[in-house]
Image 1 (tube, rainbow, N blue to C red):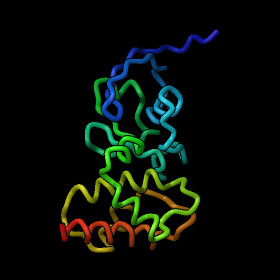
Image 2 (image 1 turned 30 degrees about the vertical axis):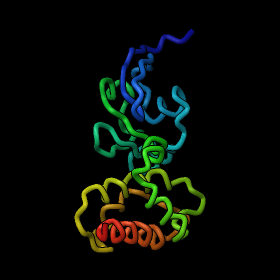
Image 3 (image 1 turned 120 degrees about the horizontal axis):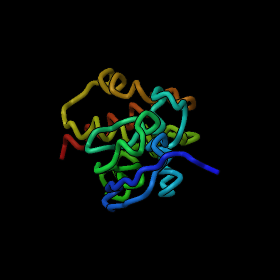
Length: 161
């Protein structure tokens, strides 16, 4: 018999208001994956280090493995699925493909989420500033150069208008 305490939470996920019961100790990324079948955000280190679980909560990118689902009660959550469906990162996704900035793809949702945050700031960045901003996201396949290329190209294209 499972006696784990649960709590009813209501949040807006990718523009849709949902209400569910969640175990009080369940991480937000697990809630999104298991309850809502939004599996784009990945679980990597479970310590907030790798960035694979990055999601947007109330406009700020957070680590979904460090936040409990119950902490998101009343919040607006955007996952990689919502970010992609909105068209906000269509150009960035195209640059990732063109520059071969993804290989196994495991880190890609977190990379895109974090890069979208950088690009939304709208300020010019050097390659070193991009690298520093992205330093909380790990990739074991690409060596990062192609990722920085894709972000820089997107940033320069957006600056041109």
